[in-house]
Image 1 (cartoon, one colour):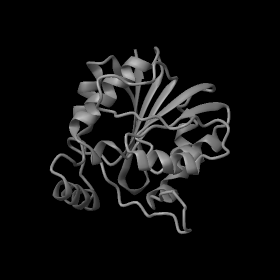
Image 2 (cartoon, rainbow, N blue to C red; image 1 turned 45 degrees about the horizontal axis):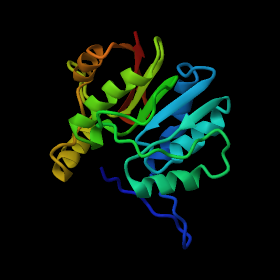
Image 3 (tube, rainbow, N blue to C red; image 1 turned 90 degrees about the horizontal axis):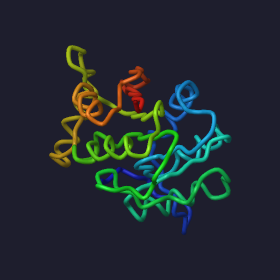
Length: 208
């Protein structure tokens, strides 16, 4: 998976920067206040630059945050962004599509902007893995652009989908209904669908 990261400005700065983070992190945090548990571990899958987990860890200091990413350079960036934040664990080498994860238990699983910039197999692995690590009633939270049957798609999302598929034919916006169907097969039931700014959605599933 590749992202249009902006490298750190200073020499030796290992932090990557994703411009979308500054635009969406407050809106994401506001919704998460209604969804996340009061305590426990939140596993973030595909943490990318690490900017989201650094921000959210400070917004939710009672939670323990476990970032992860399969990209070594991303893990270096995550560690740099989270340096000194005491409720963030060192980032794990975790591939969402892998048959086994290095995490055995979490009170919530969060995945921001991965589903559309990865192969469908990564989403299948994410759903299966979340079902393994979550207890009954615990949430799996997905954020990003999605398609919905019988709901008009914003022109900007159509153009974005085309650009993604041009970069990699395995990528592209996914149908909410397809994700819901696969999730149900892993005992993950859709709890909420929340419209977010910039034509994004937040999908919340609960482990039965």
